[in-house]
Length: 268
Image 1: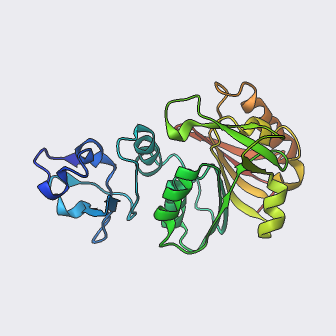
Image 2 (image 1 turned 45 degrees about the vertical axis):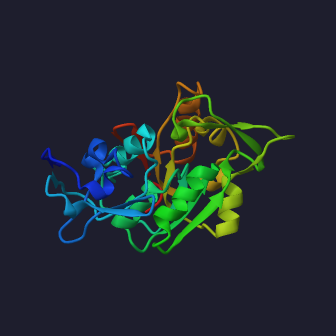
């Protein structure tokens, strides 16, 4: 994909409220006559109003935190690098999004599979608020306000790292303030007999998720797309791949950017 950015002055109507626009114009996308709309502080910024921006990719809209390097990085990963692009033209009807963040992955999935059902799991209040804004115009998305774990428990958020999108969960069975749910609970609650696509980006929580209690639900999954964070949770990658080899047996394996895609060959 090519982006052409022609330097010029942004309209003064948005310069005060959206002063960072010039810094992430490369993340504004529109396709054909449909355009991307970014909303901030009540002001609409429409991509095709700016002649100095030319791009092609997705007809999506989103809200990013002003000045958030993390949000812009995630947007770039998903919509420019397309790290979640599937290697083959699979039919995707049911999606579970673990670590839903502000909803950008859900927007991407809906642009590819408009009729899909998405179960999104996200524990952070700020992310949940933006997720709701970003997906409120879409049908078929259900949000579970919780953290994912290998069992139902209580969790805490550890904000050791700089960016809002890089916090991670820790179990605190006694005093934890965040609800922790396991995949078996989600499968039962939402009636998930089959999961066509499981996305996992939980900043090291995959070590706990795939350490135990995975055999029953993982066999329902056709495709796993995961970011493995061994640097934050040593052994996370080993736990994941051991679980996949045990349950899937035969699988296809692809890497795009930071995302590993595993396709279960036992499920048609």
